[in-house]
Image (tube, rainbow, N blue to C red):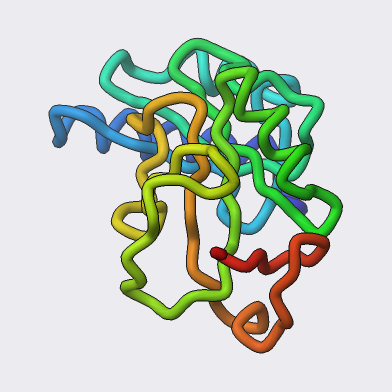
Length: 159
């Protein structure tokens, strides 16, 4: 992608078309290790995707539209810069916000956090069908497991 962006995007499109012929519905997440604005950089990748392809991503760019293109949906990622009030303000716009909590894998989340509805984001990575205006709760993974939790930290306390 870095060295040959046009070729990489063409391959993504080609593989998406092939997958769309083999499956009734395809969920496509473009930003696995990036946070690119695909809708601005290569809008044709979204507009020319087959009708049975839904694209979704996580983003740390809170200035973005949660639905920047047809069949493209974003979930915003909370960081140490986002406290409950910031998250609530974003959720009140109808957006979803992923929040990392200092809980073990398989934790049974409460229905709400600071009055905001929660859905368990670890059940599936498919964010496209999530109801709007929710916290997407994720348990801490990797280095985040060793981070202290706090309302002003990346890892938030569940209580």
